[in-house]
Amino acid sequence: MSAFDRYYKREKLISRKLDIEEETYAKLEDLSKNVYDASINKLVNSAIEELLDTEKIQLYNMKNKRYVSRSFLIRQSFLEGLYELKAKYKISINLLVNISIKNIIH
Image 1 (cartoon, one colour):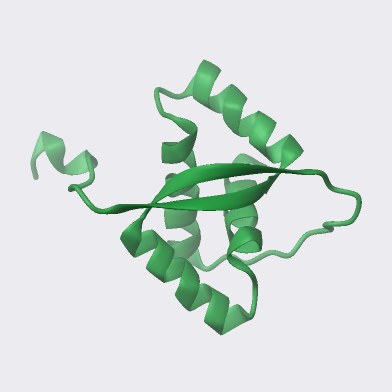
Image 2: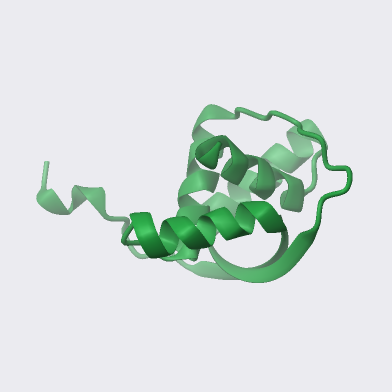
C-alpha cells in the first residue's frame, strides 16, 4: 500500500450541467471553503461515489425547493454508474446527484 493510494488515478472528466437544490449547494460551498481542502466538484464526485457504493436511494420531499444550475466535472466511471442507477431505479441523474449530496451532508 502506497501513500499515494488515497488519490485517484487520472480519469476523463465529463462536464454536466445539473440542477442542485439551492440550500444543498450553499452547504457544499461552506464545506468547500471552511471545512475541507476540496473543490465543490470533488465533494460532488465523492458524494456520487458513496451513492454508487451503497445504493442508498432515499427519496425526499422536493416540493417548494429552489434549484441552481451549475456545471460539474464528473468522473466518467461515476457518470456511467449514475446511468446504471437511473435505469435501475427510474430516477433522473439530477435527482440521483441531489440524493447523493444530501446523504453525505445531512
